[in-house]
Length: 159
Image 1 (cartoon, rainbow, N blue to C red):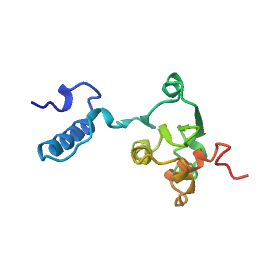
Image 2 (tube, helix red, strand yellow):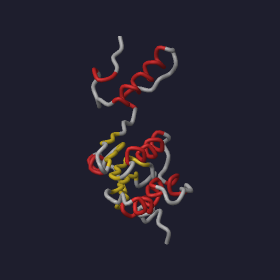
Image 3 (cartoon, rainbow, N blue to C red):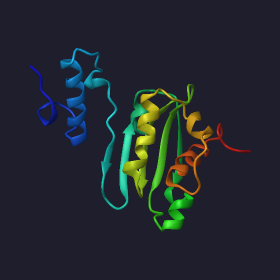
């Protein structure tokens, strides 16, 4: 017997139900499937500006006793945000101080619901924040602002 979607514990989002479907499909097809408890669930609130998050918040990381660094930048410092007059908001990225792995991110701003998936993919791949810092981002884009936010940390700053 299997249960999927809103009748299961956890966040009740359409994308969670769709992921339940994918996991169940793999199980029924006899293929290896990841556990529901292993997934990262992005959240987006479609307000103006949008609010999106994935992974651990700064408070949750500190509560777990993790050694972290937090990069923060006003959304209004992003070139594309200035050009489009969408300057309300902030970008906050939590990284593990030792491994540089991204532990979580919160974005408040235009297209935050789209941008948060950059962090989702990087976190699922076990990638380092260095991958974003070393990436060549098109200018001017909102995504470029994610790189710029990380470069506010002394370890990634151009000096």
